[in-house]
Amino acid sequence: MQKTISLTDSHLTELIHKAGMRPSVQRIAVLSHIANERTHPTADELYSVLASKYPSLSRTTVYNSLHALVEAGLVRELEIESGNKHYDLAPQPEHSHFICRICGKIYDMALPDGLEKMATPGFCIDCVDLYFKGICPDCNTNNN
Image (tube, rainbow, N blue to C red):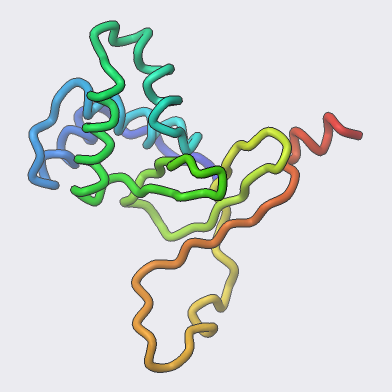
């Protein structure tokens, strides 16, 4: 899955409004980074990136913004085995993730065809989290 379009601040503001939240500069900045960079950042990574642009930004504000965006259904938490929560834009097509064992980057990947056929009858599945692990193309090239 490739990054397709960039979401403008006005589009993100509209999403935040529709979710019943008050848009703030900080919430828009957090959501914009998650939506447009597609790096699946942790809260600390978000803080590091945004603090230089917004000097008055605190870690608490980043955590509070993430919590509110998750509660509103605009952002998903990805709980990866490292123990750190990573964040992904929620309103997008279902997809899986690839985690590089060397650099730790997380990439979006399409879901395998026929996944819905694997459900056992009688179960009501509301979420599927599928992670592939291995070596990304950049690390694979650098190691050869």
